[in-house]
Length: 217
Image: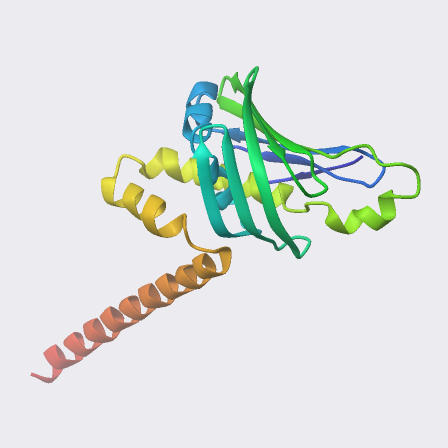
């Protein structure tokens, strides 16, 4: 297992560990501005939200059968593999476990513990032990979205802490932003920034014109 640490744009920090073919797990840890119980409450009974935050998962269809069983259909952009699997969720000490009925990845464990600054949240992907000689051919199926997933999850929780008091913002995030595919979110983000730049440019031109008119008359 190789070790790498990446720094988030906002506190808290992200630390992560990359998966190698000769190991059976990969994990990423983040610091978040919530308590452990608050983190579990946000995602334990809304697993769809957890998966849709992943910027490299295109969710085509999500079906919730009950609080412990779901079905995910879509594509993992990190390895360009189709996803069509049943999910089984069970409680663990300090979090919950998501088991996959198909695909190379066996499970993801969501665990969280309280720390002085909030909570430390860890996502751990587990893979089945493979016989010698099978690692290389299975390497292409490894889910490489874990680190981006952790980073976006951190950013989402920072935003949620800052803006969840605002009803229209919560509605937008749940009804508009969350169902979007990652590409649609990026396009929307660019459009908003371009629109903001156009508004600023318009007002600058208007102010210049206003002062010029004042000097002329």
